[in-house]
Length: 154
Image (cartoon, rainbow, N blue to C red; front, side, top):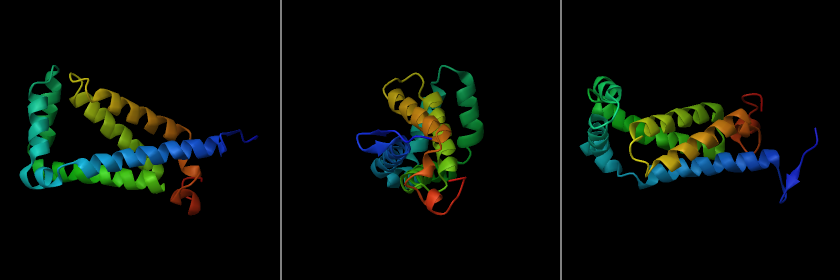
């Protein structure tokens, strides 16, 4: 197979760069999150509950009330530390396929919750698209700990 170089990088290196950029995007999401508010006061879950309650699709509110509302503290920790784990995993390329699937699912959940507010949807859709492309292109094969440790066929 011929390796094509564009601006000094191979296709595999460009895909790794895309994966690393996505990881940095998740780290930024974690960094700017009010962790004290989320973890001690539950502000993020309270906000999401209000969004779900006003959602145009009743099943969103029902699902939120059944799955998230009864466990606000564990769900807050799950969201906050999932964003951190995704960011670290994608940036260094550790357990990358798992992180890409997790990030894709989290972005799709964010998209579904916020479907009536297009202000944030561009970000969620782009992050989901990057996750899908990076997953299908096996972006962990270059510049990753997965590759260094020969994980996932790297």
